[in-house]
Image (cartoon, rainbow, N blue to C red; front, side, top):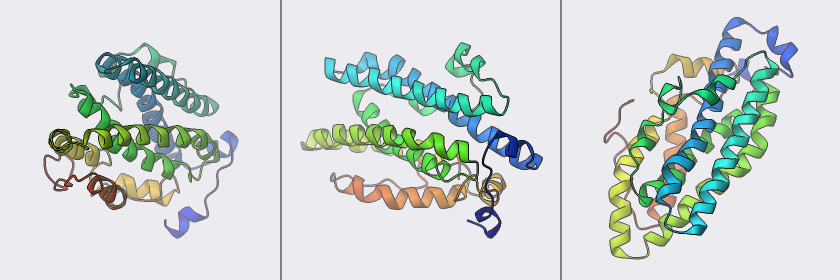
Length: 244
């Protein structure tokens, strides 16, 4: 973090309204995207993963995860409401109508291996992003993230367990490896463009701790050992990427 961002502490909505326009615009954009993403996550679990779940237990887990994602949406919506922004319109939108989070990569998941990788590595990236938000200079965001992080750890752990079970056989490991190549590229792109000036602005204001590329490299370092522990090979960092 920069020296400037370390000194920033915005405790409530009244203090937020006194902050410069740049701070307000960045925060609103960040929280809109997060809140919309959580809502879309609920749709992903019910519309995509529930129908492909192989048994009653996994269908129940999909329902539980969807409920947690809706809870995360509600928490984000409440923080936005505190600064005068209504998100009820998001509930009426179809996924492809949403502005910030269309989950193009998730739309292309057609099997249970893809679902497992979504949680194992995809939600792990989201977890890293929320961990940054949990240290936000805007206290209502930081407070909001505490219970969200607890749920997200469970999501990642569930995806890892499915992948671990599949990797017990050579055939299953080969199938997970094949899916990993595409999933890895989509996941790394979640962090955005490496040369983003906007990400530097977020760091300056204490709304994030890392630039896009710093966050991506941190994620790669954290996740690589977990992937290799399953006997899998980590794909090249630039393979199939859209946002370099």
